[in-house]
Image (cartoon, rainbow over all chains, first blue to last red; front, top):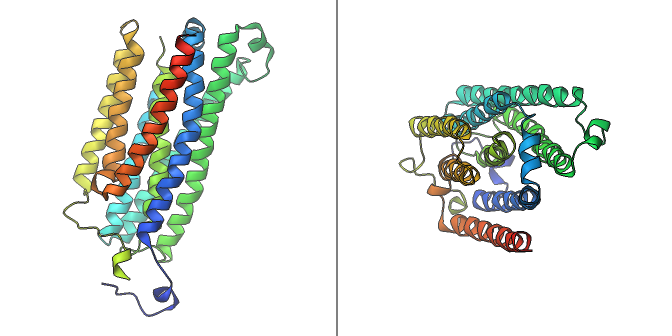
Length: 207
Length: 99
């Protein structure tokens, strides 16, 4: 099975199954973390239905849609990176990983322009414009900044993790025979995508 | 030693084609949910948007995240977590909606 040269690594203990279960357990804690915020959203949206609709009109649907497409595409390139590595194609695997990171950065750039536009219009936590708005609108923007902010933080962490993966593949620490790290990195990346799948309609598609 | 490694039989793991197909479905569903948001469905708007998001999640979890091809234990774990989440959502909803 293993064609690795006899080195130190060959003798280290390795448990891919356990590593994967561990990753999923971590993802579940992430799910519950965001789940709590989604519960807050549900409760406040019920209470301030009108204000939520009014506040959501400020959000740019085009930018949100483009970002959704970008993130979904980055999820595809992430998966293709694993498929390529499994087929033994190291170069393509790295190329797909770089593409994934490019899409992630693209997502963050669009997010930056979105937030800048909001802040330019005086809509940011603690602003005077916001103080004049109704309670429901303030809560909407509070949730918007918290949830997309926490999600953005996950994107940044994901980019860092993928940078490590790229270096692992380059240095043959992750190979077609031993790629659980890349798989777990991929799982994290898909979770980030998964959360955005729900954030997008809940914040951008309120009419 | 070897039985600790995940057994990736190639006939089960999706290749390039399957993943591209899923990606295209995800983009299609995104376009659909944006298009539907433009139509006034009244109180069903949120429900329809959430159903589409759920379908997208099922595609991502099953194929991209590989759950469909993983052992039963992963599916059970996921089901337990989602059930806990659903129970907390439901209990909160009953409290908030019928207060």
